[in-house]
Image (tube, rainbow, N blue to C red; front, side, top):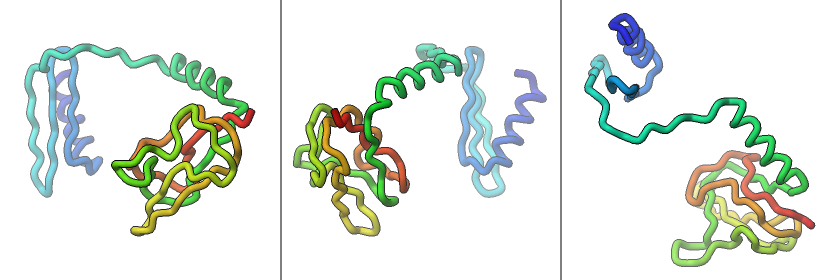
Length: 152
């Protein structure tokens, strides 16, 4: 990366509104921090770290297609509201439903907290849970897939 490219990178980060962005290659590491009217740039040789190669877009699409085919017969339980997803009734209790658990229509499978109200989400289908699609204690959106259930 030459000096002009570094300048363009700094301008891009400043205009993007991000508070901090790091760019690391085999030869260097650049961190740009913005705040108010001040922009700070740190440049250093990279820390020795394992190199990971990202999969090609074709490989990612093929894996997604395989996953779609594998779960094509499954029903998807989606979030009926915006809120925080909880798999357990409380931190010291077991999860409502784990992978492999058989659930019936009306069984509570998770809780979504919205505006300090804890809403029990019930299964809309009977079957075995084959995949949990949301992480515990994370925000979820309306319509976001939460579980895949195999009705067979």
